[in-house]
Image (cartoon, rainbow, N blue to C red):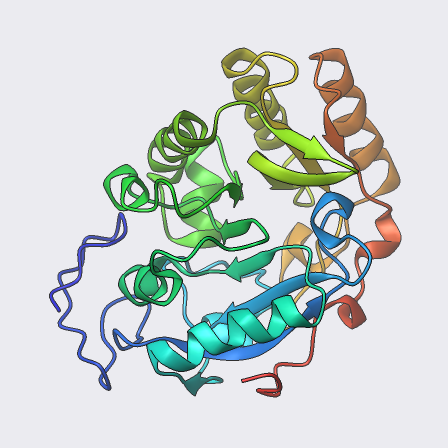
Length: 290
């Protein structure tokens, strides 16, 4: 395939076994772990956990990525479409509250084939970095019931500096609007998210203005009750980090971000304890469950 799935639009030739482009992945899926994951937002976890598949590769190059061994490294196991479908069923049989597909964009074709026309008993969650093409998302309509995008940046400079994607907000904002068009206002049942959009934003140390701009856009774009917003404090410095990125978010920074969010009228969603900024909350990518 000549790949045009994401905003990189790199036109890489990706075969079933040979990777290419920014994601460096083949067209058939590669994953690093399948598991019942306890550390997503409570509305996705339920009693037993989110049925999570961590796909390898990514179209972003975030210098602070906690999943760097799989997003930018070579950790992962090639899967057939048939095996991916089996994994979905195994996770559901284990009591998964949802099918949580992490960084699936570059495997869109294979994921759609694996989902097929089956009526899945739990929501399919598209858990992505937000750097998405609306036309790719349109292919998911009717298959994905919950979108879980990051909205990492509203300013071009940190997007360029930390993720090599100065155009991030232009694409992410349009992508989130397309996600909302498909799902409509979020819908909960017994504390679980059954349909809708849950926007995540990770506060970065020293980048409070970027966070304010993200919150501004969400507050101005959506009315109360339409989307959920998760303001995360779990930034963890990675090896080689310099400047402000070599430290954790401070209490004062996170308090200021939460206060700004509340002042802007965003009350539907989640805040996070700063104790979440620990490496042990990142799973072992040891290929189990595959």
